Length: 264
Ligand SMILES: Nc1ncnc2c1ncn2[C@@H]1O[C@H](COP(=O)(O)OP(=O)(O)OP(=O)(O)O)[C@@H](O)[C@H]1O
Ligand SMILES: [Mg+2]
Image (cartoon, rainbow, N blue to C red; front, side, top):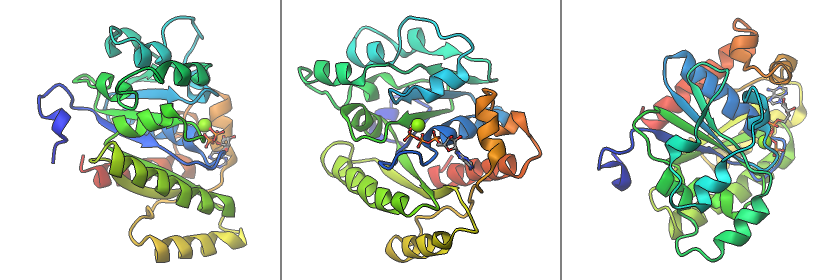
């Protein structure tokens, strides 16, 4: 079913926010590789860097130019998506680059009437098929804006027990946003993105997630794989860096599973 604000035909883009309060759980890596997997299928993708670490921006933009970025899109009612989105070296992938200073956005937004919905109002497009938002591991107002703009969220997990604690906290945030702000926000699910099958916690975490949240876990698991990290250092996705590698195969499968869960 189409979301109310998509029914006027001004938005055909499916918006996914990658959220996990525990840091280092492969949020940014997932944004990059899912974008590449969608693009490989001919779909046009917009990535939004909503983390002040700017991992996505520094990986994907050939030259870091000064100029307008997520700050202006969120804060300036006159600024449009089309004037902010930049092309990248990656085929069919554009970016809204990140800001260094999210605390600045937060202090400015306090004065705004609909401060949680500034991004939602701007993220409408008939040009892109998918928009993937990278969020920070802190639940700041920009992360809430991302959740209010998204159709649904995906939560990454690792074979580290702390990411399981992060899942519960991220779900609390999801429920808060659903109840109070974006009533149509979906939970696309959670998936292992750094899966170490040798770790004694892997099976335990998987069992716990399946018991406590049946149906939430994606079948596809991305194995711990040095090539995924190497690709990022080379400013590439695993799909272009090592197209036949197991990591590329797994990211393609994850993207397909996500599409099914999104109903795309
Ligand atoms: N499947 C994988 N195998 C091995 N290393 C991985 C894998 N996925 C991600 N990494 C590496 O793990 C590190 C953390 O990943 P990433 O920066 O994407 O996490 P994050 O959740 O965005 O972190 P932060 O909370 O700081 O934003 C990076 O060095 C990344 O290259
Ligand atoms: Mg990150």
